[in-house]
Length: 285
Image (tube, rainbow, N blue to C red):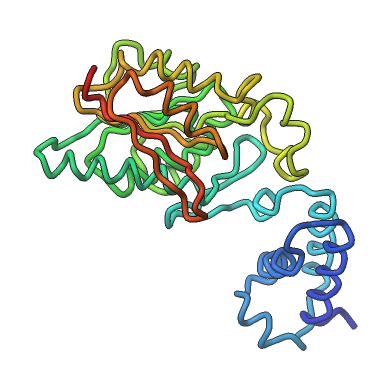
């Protein structure tokens, strides 16, 4: 006789815990949800139900991969972002909840533009990765003309898959930062660029080290991309446009200083109380 849901859940949790996986109980539940197709509440209510042989084999494989510290999101294949369900895999960085603060900042600016009479504001997402920001912006502000760039062809392929699945009209361009949009200007520029200092990349959590290095490595001090964005943004922002970026813990003062020559700088905290967004209005461009 096969394992009951309750037994399978307990064994999975024990295996994950022994492997040092953070939040083993929660991860075990999500793996069970994936292989059974049930929600977490039904799993508990039907704990005596027997796991099918195919589901048991699938769970064993997924548990082994999670014990090897492969990210849970890569195993499940999806990640929620700003109310959307995005496909995720090793081609791009996994969207984080902290980045929703950057998305909200951009949407607020676009809504203000619409209220002031700009009918089709232009938005640009640099280093788009999975396409999370660009897709969320276009879905929630349908009249916006959204462009997204990334150096990685693999990441752009994933972003296009997400946009197609979610019905988002986004122009995706391959290239380094602003290079693919030479000569164009935008009312909003957003970016969640690589910002981990190079020497810290090897010390990141095991799961994070499974994500693309090019999406993490921000140079010696983690600020390389902010310097380039600060230098190049004036040629691509419309008067009154907004430039907003996500920053790592403790980086906000340095990034704010880099942006201070561009206009009025403000910072914003994420849901965890960390200063996560630095934004500058193009008042003096």
